[in-house]
Every structure is written in C-alpha cells, then in structure tokens.
Length: 280
Image (cartoon, rainbow, N blue to C red; front, side):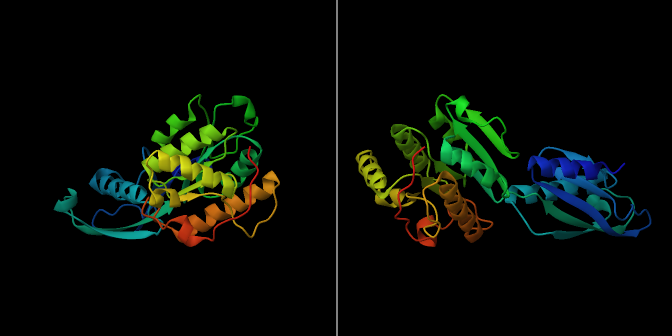
C-alpha cells in the first residue's frame, strides 16, 4: 500500500523529476476513490488512480509536463464518457504536481582542487551534475548524491551527450584540453552557460586561437572567462568555487524555465570578472 510514497521518496533522492497525480474530486455513478494518487516519472509509473483510459490520459499529461519542464501545479477536469471510453457519465478532477524538477543540467570538466570544492556545492542545488575527467585518481572516494562521475580518456567526446541548455564549466589540468573543450562547446553552441576558469590573459590567448579556427565574435562572447561573481574575492579553491556556484545560481534564476541556447547570454546578466583564477 501507498507505493507512491516510497516511489516519490526514491525519485527525489535520486534527483529524478516526476509528477504526483491526485484525484481531488469526482462526480458520477461509478466514482473512483478521491485522494487516490500515482507518481509518474519519464519512464515509470507507481501506484494507480484506478486504471483505464483516464489513468492513461493522466500519464500522457504528466509526461508532457516533464518534457516541458513545467514547475507549476495543474488542474485538469475530465468529463467521463465516450471520449474516455467510459460507459457512464461523470466528472473527475485531477491535480498534477511536478516534483523534483531540476533547474540546471551541469557538466564540470576537471576534478582538480577547484572542481573538488565546486561539485559538492552544485550537488546541494536543484541540479544534476556530470563530473568528467580522464584521471580517475583525482576523484574523491565519495561522490555526492546527484552527481555522475565520468572517467573518460577523451573528455571532449562527452560534449556530444550533453543535454541542450546545459551549464558547462571547464577547469581541467591542461590548457590544450581546455582549448579543445572550448572549441567543441562553442561549435555546438546550444548551452545555457559556459564558464572557463582562468585569467583575462588566458581569455585573450584563447580568443586569438579560436578566431584562427573560424569562430566569430558573437560565439566568443558567450564564453565566460574569467568566471565567477566579482563580489566574491579570494583565490582559495573554495572561494573560487563559491563565486562560480553563485554565478550559476544567478544565471538559472534569471533564465528560470528557459534553459536552452535561447536563454539570455551570461555576459548581459553579470559584469565581466577581471580577477585571475587558479588553474587546477
């Protein structure tokens, strides 16, 4: 009994979005149980509101809400009858409540000192994190919940698998790898945010090399380097991590509900950071 309770708890622990569907009112000659609930995730359903075509329609609506990233609750009124394959008339009202919607899909390239300080901060936010590095020994023994560790000999190849509208943070141990990751991200150009760790001097050097590869000024402007909030001073890994996390929060709050490449560029939302940053 009450499978939906344990299912909801498990999905929220895993950081997987879902929709809680509840019958809140029903009128008719064959009413269902008011208060019945089911949980709908992208691939599974848990518990039941009575089965039949009504439940099928509810699943469709819930999954459409998940695809659209809808955060608001939604009421739907169903007139039971031929349209829902019911032999008897009646009205059922369902409440759809999105649960555990993530606000950002984040990819962190680099498991050095700043990466190890940053990822736990991001994991505590309503985000999903891919943490990518070629050096398995650099990852801590405990990986925070909601973080997927990816050990890849070719980190650049991981960019193809990122969801559109991702928040991408590049802070590897190798400048050439940083450059190749930057080029691949700018070529794809469907991120909501792209931050590159380093100084203004590093940015100038990268822009010169990227222009030689054919990248235009508008594409280069989407790169945030140096990244992080200027108000957060200091060069300790945790201080840099806090400034970057603050910038991520400011960006997804400003772009709430529109995590796609059409979101407002970060350069228009925040002042340019002039401070240098430690390189992992």
